[in-house]
Amino acid sequence: MPHVLIHEVGPRDGLQVEAKLVPTERKLDWIRRIASSGVDVVQVGSFMRADKVPQMADTDELFKTLLSEAVPALLSGLVLNEKGLERALACGVPLICMGLSASDTHSRKNSGMSVDEALPRVLGMADVARRAGRRVQVSVQSAFGCGYEGPIDRERVMDIVEAYMASGCRAISLADTAGHAHPAQVRDYVERVLAMDPTAEVTAHLHNTYGLGLANAVAAIAAGARCIETSVGGLGGCPFTRVAAGNVATEDLVHALHREGVREDISLEPLLQVAKELSAFLGRELPGCVYKTGPIAFHAPA
Image 1 (cartoon, rainbow, N blue to C red):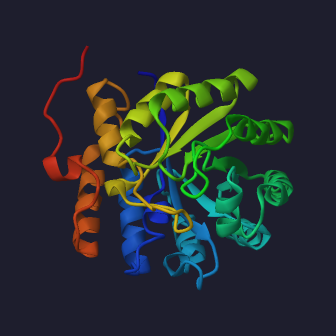
Image 2 (image 1 turned 90 degrees about the horizontal axis):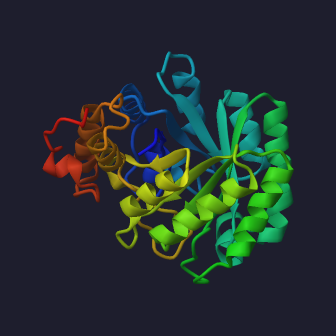
Image 3 (image 1 turned 120 degrees about the vertical axis):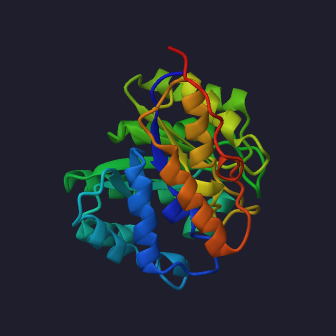
């Protein structure tokens, strides 16, 4: 099992569908502790209108506070449009994430635009962000299937990837927004992207809607994905997809990697504690497993 980066998206994707608003100070505490675990990237929030996603109303404040501290992880933020990009640049966000859906139906629900309308705007935003000296990650959402349209043509996904690469984008996320992916499909898509450009930094963003999230993550890593996006406790879900379900739980993937003798530099304990606190705060059991069972005591192979 090769070395892989962990991009924690819980503070954004994990909380965006939650009706119970999390106080800013509590978010800051959770983000600091998640970052202290040794994960590589933490997605602090998205720059969306507060009336659309109230949970993200304090994203600017979170970034301004965290970027004034020595947080031991790269911080990322999601933008959906030019106004969001302006806010992200003003806040000094180091890694700006953006993208579009391969599904026209999901794209219109998510951004109010068709795929063909959204693509040139995303490419333009990516260019602005890069010229401002920021790192950029672009994504193809609903890459493996859509809750509204069903299967998405693979060539449509690869055409979007090709357009990203032609514009100079090399950090590309394949997002299983609807949770329809299966391991063979994930392997195939990651390998196809890397065949286009072996230097591409491929990320897999996987939802566990139908129970295949962790299996898909392992398949992505084996195929050469550089990074996996996960959410502490398994929280998450796109508010604009048909069936919103959680991400792969960060602590579950880290535990699995530890069993393989990989990423032992990441400490499970802070992740488990935050997952337990999230469960208590939200008043329900979360989808993750290891925060409930506890990790297996074992010695990694020499």
